[in-house]
Amino acid sequence: MAELKDQCSKCGSTVGVEEVKKNDDVFLLCKNCREGRRITIRDLLNEIRWDKRHDPDSYSVVFIHRTDEGNTKEIPYSSIEDIGGGFFTYSYMGDEGTIPLHRVIRIINKKTGDILIDRELKRRNE
Image (cartoon, rainbow, N blue to C red; front, top):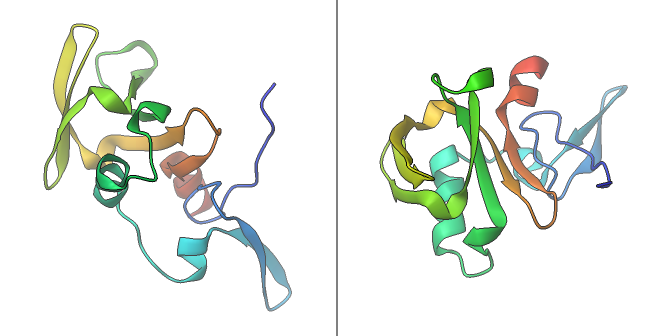
């Protein structure tokens, strides 16, 4: 069974999470949120593609998919063919489409279990 990791209270990331005290409250924040940087879905998708520290085959993307049971679909990052200004296109197991970036829910490193962003957690905390 995979080890449960601390998630950032703001974005849901499990990467570089540390406790931060503000007044009498304690929050768990990732490095980007601690530094006040806003990382977009597009930034993350492009970073995985172009940064040699990442292995694109290790990642998956979960998004709202209106025609699938459960309304979400998880695809391997490697099935993404293009990343545009506000969308990505993919082709996976006979299914292909153009997905607006606002429908991306989660980006996961399947090898490490790290979550780069979890919008469902972020929405619950807002």
